[in-house]
Image (tube, rainbow, N blue to C red):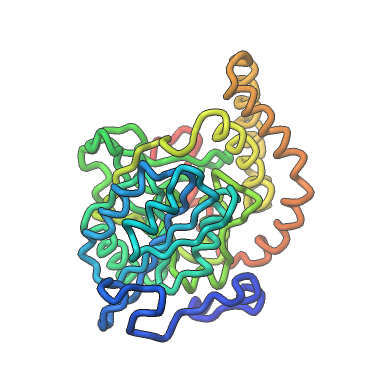
Length: 358
């Protein structure tokens, strides 16, 4: 596969998304920004989806101002915030490009709006409830440069208020169709210090190579919230791109500050089924169907046992919505599976066993 070439269909999916041929500031970029410094380093765009996150943005944006990497473009895609986020950005952060979307269109659609507007060779999604280490972007770009086969780079995400504890060291996908965060809630004792391949990057801090996005497309907006990053990783992996975990690219995350509860339970329940329907290859289905069915039945049984809880009922509604969405995902499945360039042994190597602790 020639990763430097984009297919015609991929170009149609992201029509109008092109790198600006400039080393100087554009009309909407202040001249004192480090964004367009004359240098051979690739421009990197950071996209922050925001919905009523005015209380999070100052910490996040201050950490981006402290980045040692010199060529950074920052975009905030705002999902119709009503908490003064837009006023805050206009008043205190004139160097940030703001995309006001007018209403809450979901995480995936906000990120896609930012990616279409991005000018960087590398495009990085960052939650608004994060703080990035000053060398974070430099380490992300360095990982891309060391690994031309990588379309995705995953950061070392630690908890904001317990900075010796992991949120994720890259994400895994189990053979039974359950995704998860490597190392979540584990104390950082150096066990994830090695740069290595992982299945995917958490969307709270996920870096993408532009060439990969041009080939496989952007986030699937039907996912709305949750697992859209896993879906994109599946499409990338099937097309032959790798995901690299960069342990020195550190981000601190206020886990569940802008999501969780019944919303997360519903979309997890639905989107786990979407992933299995759209992305999970047929030859693996034939091998692991018992484990897949067992995992879904356990989710159902656990939710029924906790029926009085709102999150449990939301999970059941999500599973039902996933089943109702099967026809739509099956239509998408044809294109995804046609793009596959890797063999079964490779796919088995990147998935995690049911009983493994990655």
